[in-house]
Image 1 (cartoon, rainbow, N blue to C red):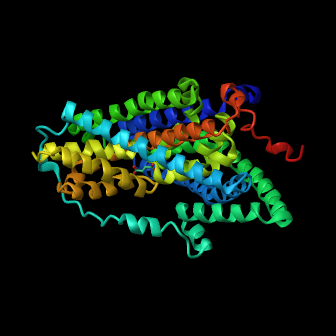
Image 2: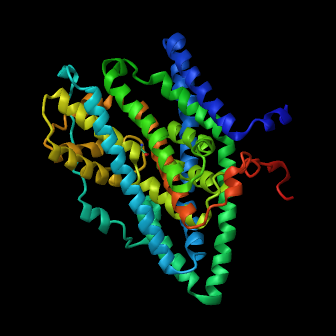
Image 3: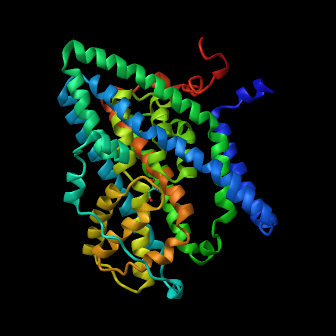
Amino acid sequence: MTNEKQKMSLTKRVILGMFMGIATGFLIRTFLSDINFVNEYIVHGLFDVAGKIFIASLKMLVVPLIFVSLVCGTSSLKDISTLGRLGGKTIAFYLVTTAIAITLAIIMGNIFEPGVGVDLTAATTFASKEAPSLGSVIVNMFPTNPISSMAEGNTLQIIVFAILFGIAVSSAGKSGDRIAAVFSDLNDVIMKLVVMLMNIAPYGVFFLMAKLFTGIGLDAIVNLLSYFLVLSSTLLLHGFITYGLLFKGFTGLNPLTFLKKMETAITFAFSTASSNATIPVTLETATKHLGVKNKIASFTVPLGATINMDGTAIMQGVATVFIAQAFNIDLTMGDYAAVIVTATLASVGTAGVPGVGLIMLAMVLNQVGLPVEGIAMIMGVDRLLDMIRTAVNITGDCVVTCIVAKSEGEMDLDTFNDPEAGNKDEELHLHHLKE
Ligand code: ASP
C-alpha cells in the first residue's frame, strides 16, 4: 500500500485531490444540498475548516521564505551590477508580457464581442474603491520598519529590505560569510517545511475544491456565458501560445517540458486563487523542477507574484471591452491605448490574493470613463475565472524566471530536462527524522 502510494508522484496526487474535490462538490450540490447535517457539518464544518487551515499554512511560509531565500540569493551574487541588470531585465519582461496580455484581450473582446446585446438589468451597484496612485505605490515599496512589513506581509517591502540586507551580508567580509552560511542553512530548513506542506496538499486541495464547488454560483455563468468563454479562452491562448512562443524564442528549450513541470504549481494557484499563497510552491518548482538557480528565482518569483499578473490584466482587458459593449459606449484607439497602460499598472498594483483584480478594474474603467457599476455585472462569475487567471499569473512568473535565468547562465539544463527532477526532494520521511 505504502509502496503504491509512493509510486504516484506528488503532482499526480495533488491533481487527483483537485478533481476528487470538484466531483465531491458537484455530487453534494446535486444530491445532498437539502440535508442540513451535510451542509452544516461537512461543507461548512469539515471542508471549510480543513481548507482554511491549508491556506493558512501556505501563507505562514510566505514571509519567512521570501526573506530567507532572497537574502541567500542576493548575498551569493558576484557584484551589485548583476543585481541591477537582473532587476531591469525581469521588470522589463514582466511589463512587456502584461502589455501583450491586455492587447490580446482587447483583440479577442473586439472579435467575439461578448458584451453586445447583454441584458443590463442584472447589474446592481458597485462601490468602487479609490485606486492608489503610481507614486504612492513606489513610495510604499520602501519599508520604514522591516518588522512591520513582515507582520503585514508586505511583499514588495520585504523584497527591498531582503535585497539591501543581502548586499550588506555579501560585503561584510568574514561576519558576512558567517551570516550567509546561517541563511543558507535556514533556507534548507524552510524548504523542508515547504515540502512538508506540499505533502498534505492533496487533502488540502480536495477540501478547498469540495467546499467551493458545493456552493459556487453556476447560474451566473450561464447568463454571462459569452464573457466567460471569451475570457477563459483568451487566458488559455496566452498561457499556451504566447508563453510557449516566448519560452521557446528566448530560452530555446521545450515549452511542453516547461508546462509539464508547472503542473503542481498551476494546481495550487488554481485551487487557492492566490499567487501570493502559491509562492512557496512556485519557488520550489522553479528551483527544483525547472533548474533555475535560487539566486535568480528567489528574486523573480516573489516579485512576479506581486507585480506580474498577466491573467489579471487579461480579465481587465476583456471586462473593459465587455462593459463598453454592454453599455453601448464606443472606445477609441486612444481609449484602448489608455486601457493597455492603466491595466498594466493596475495589475502591478493588484495584490496576489483572491478577487483583488476585480477591484483594481475600477481604476481601468475610471480611466476611460466607463461606469464602474459594470463590475457588479461580472462579479458573480469571477471566482472560477480568478482561479484560471491566477494559474496564468504564476505561469507567467515562471516563464520570465526561466528566460532571465537562461540569459544569465543560471539555469541547470540537466534538471530542466530530467522529468523526475525534484520528485525525490518532495518525498517526506518523517518517521526517521534523522538519517
Ligand atoms: N487572484 C489573483 C492572484 O492572486 C489576483 C486577481 O486577479 O484577483 O494572482
